[in-house]
Image (cartoon, rainbow, N blue to C red):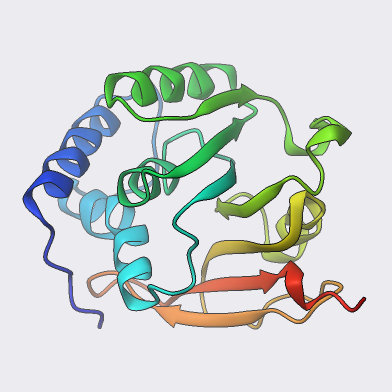
Length: 198
């Protein structure tokens, strides 16, 4: 079981504010059985993963988060890495509007795009230093959809359940296991565009 990290007061206040907004969202945010589970295994998921593997995440640059509707893991990552320049993509109109309002209420940076990732403009391909997703689709599908948006020297990171190896892409991925306060096993599946052969 991963140890729950101690939060500095400013970060804790921001994450608690997000948790309250998530609790009042006008849609079913996720299948949490309790408020405690939503906090431990939802809001804290990215906090625990980034503390467990602090060198995996760039702290600045352009960032694409896809399937962002309930703000997990986009909002906590924005709080952790305020110098990243995020573009949040969510195809559901109600969720996209809620996310846009949440970004504004929390004084975070970021554009919210209401679109299916498969219909994103070609001009966005190869543009992002970091591309992330959580529960977007099975990893084999999500990785294939998202890989084209990673720029040379950038990274694709999927927050995934279980402990299966990363699906094959033009480069080999690496799985970094972790768990959230006694929850089911999880893994960061990471691919680095810099590994692409010249």
